[in-house]
Length: 374
Image (cartoon, rainbow, N blue to C red; front, side, top):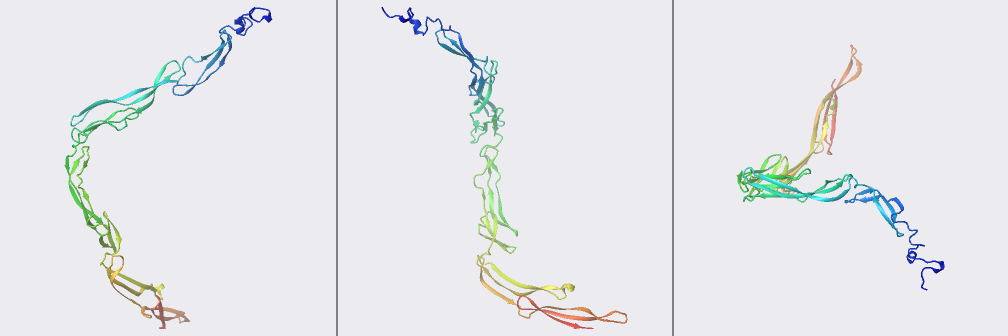
């Protein structure tokens, strides 16, 4: 007899039931859709298109599949995407148009160009409505770029259309040069004059300057043909200028000067003098004082150009011991201690004769004679 079921249990069994692990055909299996667990809170942060995190409520319920298995179903807990959620981005091209006419030559220019784009964010408002917002403005043309120009055959632009955006809007700046003379127009104006070196003692003509005719550059300014000049060639650097207030002045170039040694062959001299100061013996009364030169001398010759002297001739003198310096007299009285019939003290009169002579060592000797005169 072929094997069928488990004969030890004394009964007949279905192979299908046995394969499903039940004692009978699905008798104890939950029906499909039966809630096995949940709902369980599975809320979490979810990133939008730009990667911004938003907290989104979710719940998960586990259902029987009717075959002994199960299915998990997660439910989104919002009706609409949250406010501020960026669903996507896009680009909005930006264009600039111009139409200009020059004032004096009636030259025309017009055109349109894409100067950049706005990056738009498409944003949810939380009620199911999506709106756009400018997130970034990108300029693909550099500010100040020339969009259009023409020289009208003159060699210099007669107009320019320049990209001139700001942060609120973008526009075209029109530069009209037709009110200016065209490139190369001779404007005249040639002139010339002297360059000077000015010292405390004089103004010395040292060179000259000159400008040729000016020529229009087409943009309201001018240039020359390159023959302008300015120099101090009459007194190049190192040239002797003059003797001024006891100093010898030399050119430093470019209109400046400096002090230096007398030039070669220039007449020069040196001198020295030593003196002593004296005051009279009666200085507190007569305020007599003075100076006595006891040594003097010097040399004369011509400059060697380096601070020295050529062809020098020198001489001098020194006072001798005992040489007179000065002399004088003064009077004074002293009481005798005796009195006359009027009880007035009788005075003794003195006459002093004094003199100073040189002591041979930067000083002086004093000679004084005190004479009683009554």
